[in-house]
Amino acid sequence: MPIHNLDIAAIFEEIADFLEIKGDNPFRVRAYRNAVLTLKGLGEEVKTLLNQGQDLTRLPGIGKDLLGKIKEILDTGTCRTLEKLRKQMPPGLTELLRVPGLGPKRVQKLYRMLNIQNTEQLLQAARDGHIRDLFGFGEKTERHILEMLETNLGAQRRFKLATVTQYAEPLLAYLKDSPDVKDAVIAGSYRRSRETVGDLDILVTGRADGSIMERFINYEDVKDVLSKGATRATVILRSGLQVDLRLVPEESFGAALQYFTGSKAHNIAIRKLGRQMGLKINEYGVFKGKRRIGGRTENSVYRAVNLPCIFPELRENRGEIEAARAGLLPKPVKLADLKGDLHIHTKASDGRNNIEEMAEAGSKKGFEYIAITEHSSRLAIARGLDSRRLLQQCEEIDRLNEKIKGITILKGIEVDILEDGRLDLPDAVLGKLDLVVGAVHSHFDLSRKRQTERILKAMEHPHFSILAHPGGRIIDKREPYDVDMLRIIRKAYQLGCFLELNAHPKRLDLLDIYCQIARDEGVMVSVNSDAHSIFDYENLRFGIGQARRGWLEKKDVLNTRPLRQIRRLLKRTL
Image 1 (cartoon, rainbow, N blue to C red):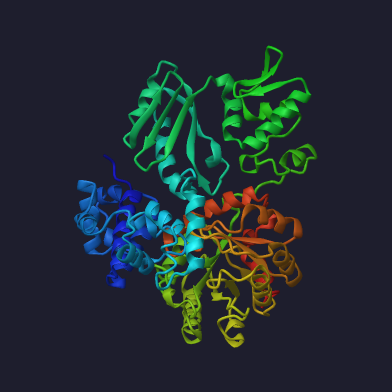
Image 2 (cartoon, rainbow, N blue to C red):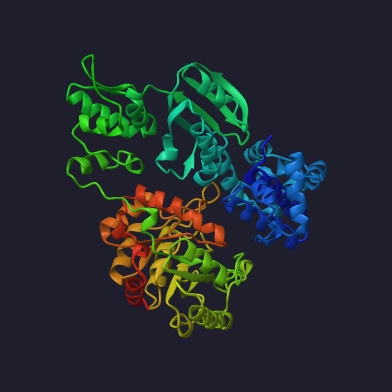
């Protein structure tokens, strides 16, 4: 049975959850959490690295003890530490930590006082009104828990795009490695770069003798085979992800790819256009009566209804068909267009590499510049920088810029926006930086008016450059805070500052609809990795996918500019 990095990360995450609920040493908990981040960010499987003789203790967060546990998991599929913790505490307790608003202390209290061991028991307790009487909860918290559970328990399980990628790409490579497969493409919401994916649809062309389906169901990561036929099979991977494989004729491949990429609303609109022209469009092709007139390529499908081919990320029926008809489709930004990254953390706060290592990794990515933007001191949990430490870091950056060739390190900060809209560091210090990234990290439940005014006031600060992760959401954990984003976007235009599209897979924030509004209002967006290690630059691919969904072109993205232009643009805000 193969063990992937995400499998090891899931075991370490469960251990950390149990330890946190128990109230164990916070440094021990953090060690597991840091290892999880490293494992999720690695581009190669740890098993491969070990087989190559590489020393994994050189990776951030991986010491000798955790390396031993990694080897144990690779050998046995589990970890004695986790099995011991599972015997001590119900496994369902860790599910409770996924409920927004429930931290370890609250989960511990629910377990000890009400013997709540899983989300189903929690839901019943909330319905019965048993939670409100516990110290530290109250009626408002009980109502919030009830709303979250009733909304999410019945929903289809969806996986973050970055998580799916780690399973989808090896599977696709495995299929393409077969001489029986001529072409293979992942369709569906994955191809449209949706932030979460319910299941995978893979389309292939090739031999129709059953060999492709047989190869598919025998993939090493398959847990269950739900169905298998001559042209379609459905499996469940060990991760819980469902994958459908369809074998289609070459003359229908483009039509099938267009159909299964979706979205449903987009496809209905395209079929309606076809009917108005006397055509029938489906997954088998484009037909005029009984005669096939298109379908071998996606382009042939769109051409049949007098449209240019609409790139997948736009296919949501949100004006793309009208734009295509008018010749106004955007030329989408590409990952290769990025010249730098303007939101990066190092060991000085909660990152896992030093500045020089981040710069060297950025140079290998072909960047002209990176901006070091540690947290400010108000975010104590991230060891944020006060004025003294920030000025010391600025001196270090000056020395490194003299030493390192081929890339420039910009001096910045991710400064907390306080509840009243002030910034967490004094003007005298902020004025010495190349850029100031403002971020909301607290008081997410303010009213729409107060939250909006708070951010607008912060943006009016003379040194404010970029608004970080503007909606404040964490996918599956925290909804965006209530804010008037149109007012914020228009204020950014008025002041000459910028909005961030945070590419971290748990955020992908700006939302795509706000990217489109920013574009229409003339406000540039900075696609940043929010990197906490050298591996996190890989997040930028997901940010670019979100940018493409938001209709952004190269000209709409701040950090597609070369260094000279970036300096000039940032000076408008300093």
